[in-house]
Length: 333
Image (cartoon, rainbow, N blue to C red; front, side):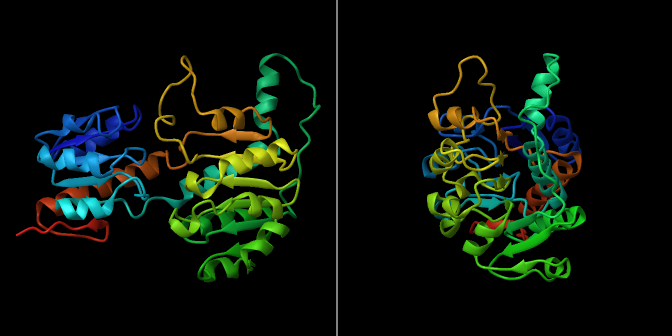
């Protein structure tokens, strides 16, 4: 089968092409999939998308008109896909339901450690041979109260690392994870977790009930010197409210690997023309804020697993099978 892959990163391309080489013809594109680039897929039965592609009803309609039958998304998240429209069009949609949770959990902790110990500021200073310690005072992670919102696979990995630091653990989720309680985690309601935690990390999916889970009211509950980490989905945080909180001199550190309006910005080089998003532009000016570009998943292990699962999803589609990664099965004879 011939497959067109959109949004392929430079480091990802050789891994992707090597995995597909034996069974499928693959064409890799750096451009992202949206209404303007969808016509490039004309004649391809299968399209592989990335998390920042825009697969709304209009884009899906263009893909279907061009002969596309399968969209194999190379991510766990799928909030960028209009599943109802896909079902109406008879498309099959598959995702990657699992890849290394350690990749994301470790990156979340990298963000937490970096903002706590002011590593970005220290690095920038040392490059200019300024070796003062002014403004670089951090805190011991050991003994902190760490709140984990969402204790699934990634949240559990994050909790295990937190336990290794010697922290007090609070959790919030719709169901308790026995592995987390065995590590000493106490489950509390969300308000109590926000109020008591020194460090808060988000590991929940983006669904209507979790949109802006961290809004102005939630931010107001947090300690003035709390650290907030989000490596899950940008829409969990009301960024405008976060900026206002930072402007008020609150929160000692914020580490974000995702941003609610990241589509069209993350994965692109905007260093020459800049960005028109005033909220993001203001956010990155705060010295206690560190933003990375949705790279928490980007390890050899995780990307390899994502690619292997994507190949399996395409193989299963070609054989007329659905599997645990199928979100929308098409009506096929």
